[in-house]
Amino acid sequence: MIRIVLFLFALLISTPPALAAKTILIMGDSLSAGFGLRVEQAWPSLLGRLLREKHPDYSVANLSISGETTAGGRSRLAPALKQHKPVLVVIVLGANDGLRGLPLKQMRDNLKAMIQASQASGAKVLLAGIRIPPNYGPYAAEFHASFKDLARQHKTALLNFLLEPIAAQSTYFQADNLHPTAEAQPLILKHLWPALAPLLK
Image (cartoon, rainbow, N blue to C red; front, side, top):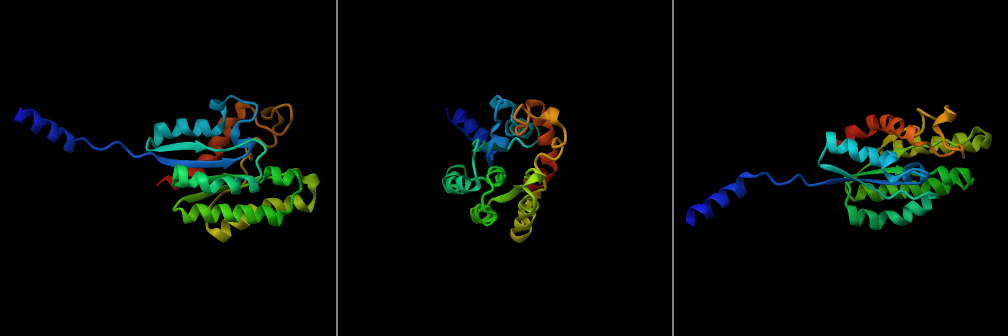
């Protein structure tokens, strides 16, 4: 009996503990929620699959919602940080603000609050930029510049434009010409990965 107890004790102390899951929290809109697609086809799900291969100690919590604005993301962030305790927050919001022509100061204030709250929780931040059609005039240029300005001011990682590898190819968009197809999702992830991977070290 004593030998069995000693063996079990030795086994316990010699077995390394399971890797604690580190959570990557994604706060986005329909571009990250996989609008019109099955959940497993969207790039956040593909990211989760890639992490299981390359960084099994990381997992993905995708809290993206179709139609979400920066105001909505800001209102949902605090409980999300409390629940998931992420080590990295990927913010992919702003498209709906821009398409609706909402005040840019309001968008910037919301993103700023999200960045600061994430950093205060101890998480790193990756801010993903978005572009809106050029027919929005000067508003479109100022809109896109806002992401770079915020990343510089708050020292966050930046992905200049989430949809850059597919933006000029209509075949990668659904019939609404706004939402990427399933075939586009791996290309989006491949584009995002070089900005995200260094933050996992």
